[in-house]
Length: 230
Image (cartoon, rainbow, N blue to C red):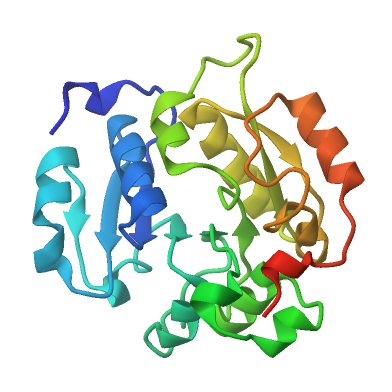
């Protein structure tokens, strides 16, 4: 457990993270450092997460446990793995639980997903599979930047992240959490507008301030670039 575990002063939440790769792992590191109670799961079972648990103080759990008794769930897995999640994973999960989708559709990895190719946004497709509203965030963020780029609120040059979703209360929870993590946020609209931050869009992968994020979102066009089509 790191000495920075209790650096935050905000309300400490129970957070479930599904996926312990680069994004999920680094969010586990940062959120535990802020004092949040994190349960982390992957497809291979909790026994494979011992090292991450020892490093961070997070609790390794089975995927089915990551959505129970929490206030926020982060889904940080490849898009192709979303339909492979346990059936009914979000059955009975209160509407008040904010679910963050960090995923991106990469046809070279995920194979052809016809609805996305035909114009359904990646996170809308994910939401339909999960059966619970999602907020799209962190999808265009380099994993290492989650550790390296946090800055106190009001610091010049503080990096901003776009956040899209339909549920305004859930979006506020997510934006507040990102603020606590050390980043500004920009409201990128509803989930059907989240194509503005999908791979190949001007904002994707950019680490810039809020005003620049707004400009990049405005420059986006809905056509999916050829490099990101099957």
